[in-house]
Image (cartoon, rainbow, N blue to C red; front, side):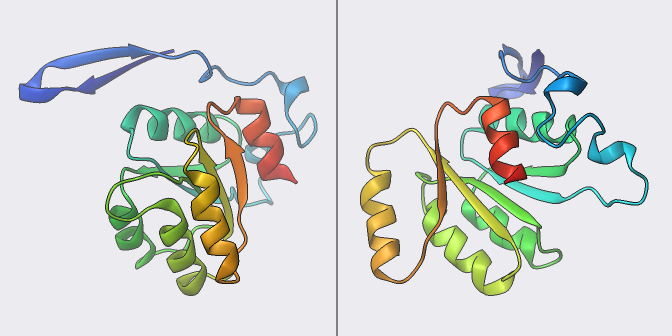
Length: 159
């Protein structure tokens, strides 16, 4: 899939990535009928947070194409601002981010939106230390390793 983004100084940057293709109907983790086809069911709201905009946008696109109502933010602070107006049903966040890491964000969201499910993902070895610190403070979060395949993400959200 091709994604065009605005680069520095107004230049357009075309980026290509592998996993943003639509999932075939028979591959959907929740059966042959997608959530968006069932008019009686509301699409779950997902807040995707990653300081790498390409990853945040890719995950958001994958989720929107597969029955979720996803929106991307690119920092923990932007996510905190977003939840002031609307709590997500699900938070999908990177762990290693500047200023406010994913565990700090997840803890803040859990306080503001206690019903929100939290799913963290990371490709950084330092994540285990952060998770251990959170565990010592009584916090527990689901974790997926980057790079995450769309089916793995969709299956994790389904369970």
